[in-house]
Image (cartoon, rainbow, N blue to C red; front, side, top):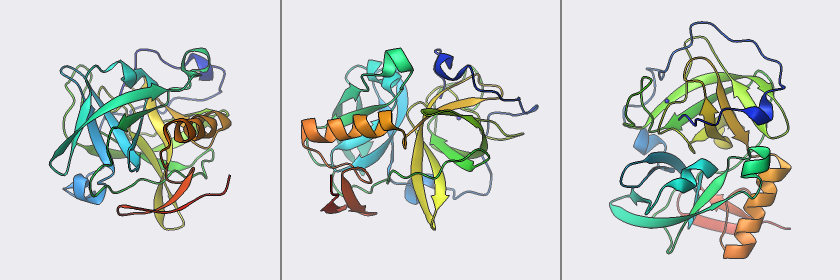
Length: 244
């Protein structure tokens, strides 16, 4: 499952213990066609690189800041191609706030949205999604999903590990971490980094840094972001703007 060579200096002070025997992989009891189950997840790509993103508004795809290095990037959604331009968090370099959005020039036709939520706690079981490789040194591939557990957290990041659980690998960067909340899957973090052996690092979306960044994007580019500045139906509609 994405790896960033910048590991986790911002969360190095967290206390955690490794779970032995973790492997890259995904659970086997998920739907065969994850694209139908999670249509909000897209493959962001350039000529040579691949990242993962989540549609969180009619023109907004959530991803990782280190994915902004992708040149001439695009994604294909329901048969149509969308060129994107990245905007990264201003706190990426100084606070390892590895969050960005990829903005399209037009509305994504028949878009289905992921909704940003909260509720992360130490011990929470979360699941990752991404187009990453299935072994170290491998190439990005098909959309995959796997379970893991939060073993440490600070204000902006989480660490996760679980015996035989999901491990992030090249291509998963920028993909969503989901939490089940009130019967719904909500996006609570962004895939950022890992050691491709035991531990994953994700950036929290309920932090002040993340909320502030997404609100600035919405205001500057005049776009709706589901769960932050707008209430969105799961399929294709912004229902209402949220009060500021």
